[in-house]
Every structure is written in structure tokens, then in C-alpha cells.
Amino acid sequence: MDSGFIEIIGLSLRVSLSATALSCVFGLALGAFLAVSEFRGRQGCIILINALMGLPPVVVGLFVYLNLSRAGPFGWLGLLYTPTAMIIAQTILITPIVAALSRQVLEDLHEEYRDHFASLGLGMPAQTRAVLWDGRYSLITVALAAFGRSVAEVGAVIIVGGNIEHLTRVMTTAIALETSKGNLSLAIALGIVLLVIALAVNAMVASLRLSASRLGYA
Image (cartoon, rainbow, N blue to C red; front, side, top):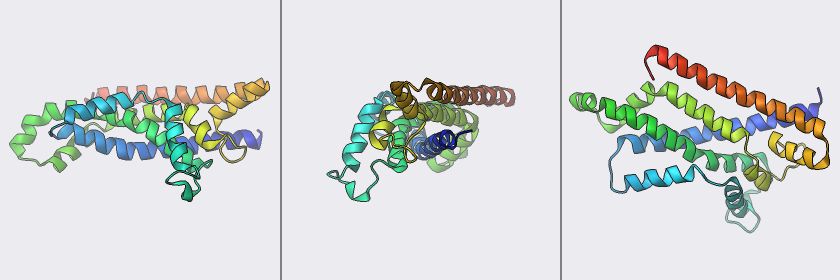
């Protein structure tokens, strides 16, 4: 198999997995906080997070580009047109998805356990740990959904990555380029790999839901 083909797939997985891991750290923390806390403006925050789930990728790409370009506030870092810039853009794009979906899962659990938590006198940190643990199966499906969204993204990564061969070319940007060049065989091959990854992610989500249902977690 062509080394360039493997390189493109490897970079796609590295960027998407890194962005998914970072978005889970930030998104789960925010989702858990919104699920178990009560404060003025909480409903507004939930509406905002839900609205950000539909962020247009090209807008996120433009935002990251302006911040990382030479004239931007973080231009001195030299991150534009690197895999790191692509990870940053994808993290911004999918963190609201993780936060909104995990908030709903954890809030439902928190409502179910509210009286039990009150009887035990548990504080917010202990309540947060409890709902995170009990919701682990559903949260893994949230992470898989975020990965699926990340690996199929093209608008933001092509703006901040530049689709540079051997540096920032991933499956989605390569498919767009090879199609425009008329090299349909490579574009179709990459598309098949992308579809296989999407099917594998959906199969894992379905398997986890079945496992959670059998174990009484869903």
C-alpha cells in the first residue's frame, strides 16, 4: 500500500483522536458542572452551549486562522498550517457537542439520584463523581459521536491546515483535492476508508448501548 495513503490516514486519526480527547476533557467538565450546579444564568448557558453545537466549521476555521495568523494575537507561536492548528480548530468545533450531550445525560442521572444524594449529604464534587461514573457508558458514546464528527470535518481543517502534502493533508481535505484534480481512484479509496471508520464508530456506539442496557445503565 502507498506510504502517502497510510500517512494521510494516520494523520487524520492522530488529529481527530487528539481533538476528541481534548474536547472530552473540557466538554465533560462543563457538562458535569451544568448538570449538577444551580446558579443564575444557568439556563442561558445551556441555551448557548446547545446553539454552539451547530457552529459552522468554516467560521471556526476563520476564527482560529485570525488568531494564529502572523498578525493575530497568537501568531508568535507559529502554529498556523500545522497539525496543532487543526487539532485546536476541531477541539473548538466538537467541545460544545460533548458538553451539550453529556450535560443532558448527567442531568437526567442527577435528577434520578437527587433525593439519594440529599439523604447522604453529598457535596457537589462527590455528586459529580457519582453521576460521571454511572453515566460512563453513555459518555463513551458521546465521545465516539464527537470523534465521528471530528474525523469527517473538512471546512475548518483546510483553512488552518492548508492541505499541505506530508504535513497537514488529512482524508477529507485529500478527497476534496483529488476529486478536483480528477484523481478519482485515490479519492474513492480514501472515501471508503472514511466510511469504514464511520461504520466502525456507529457499531461501537450500538454495542455500548446494548451492553449498557443489559447492565441496567441505560
